[in-house]
Length: 314
Image 1 (tube, rainbow, N blue to C red):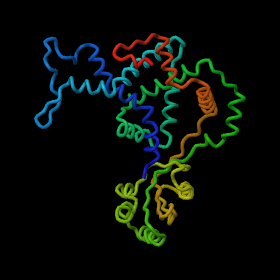
Image 2: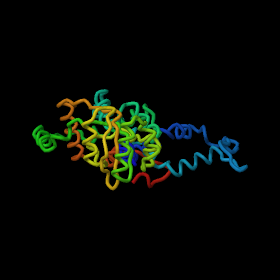
Image 3: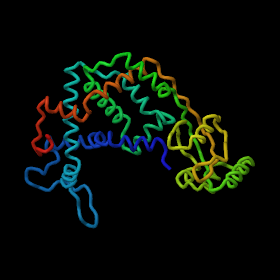
Image 4: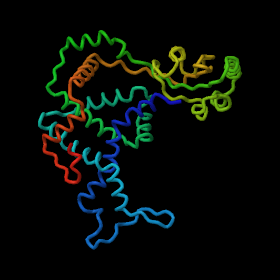
């Protein structure tokens, strides 16, 4: 069973993978550029970095493998950051701390806490807080360049908000635990045992047919109240409960569930100014060129040259 955070991360992988590779390998590339990792002038093989079954792996073999597998995207990533920085300075674009924090806040929606978000980014993508910050600044700067000169009328924003009035309504985020069983009568028995004082986590490990959550005492993590991947009635019921409350039996497709609300978080209501700024940016991005095309155009504008493989210049 996949939590909302995990689904969100899977979608974010395509966007952040290049950043992960760049930030993780940039130091190695910079050393190569300075001649630190090449074989020495006497042609002596580079240092051994690993061995298995009596066979060694040299630093040069490691570097060559990294270059062959990820070299293209890493090199383009370096060039992209250079040209985006140059264009931002030329246009006088500067991403403010407020914009960065607002973007991070939007990205963290659906997580129970800031700590959980960063822990998940570290475990799933290997990104530290600093790396997440750097990627956020880069994406915001690139978007500002892409939308430079595009004007969105206030009337268009008003129309959008009228048609999407529920979109910016803050949604509760609930930390839930579940015990899933096959039949209604089994769920009733679970409720009886809980009412008699038995431990929820222990019962989840003993009885729940959901392997993933039962291994964690029934914990599902954070779930948004309108998460489309969960039954509406279950989430509606959970949203009406208080922390510590238990409800069931609840039908979950072809099984039945007993749920407990561990914690409920109600996000702050964004200001009208912030909402309008977000809508304005989204509408401008719809009119702008795709971001990868903007990066390509900037490389052309600033005469980017690649000497190791001409195909990268396409």
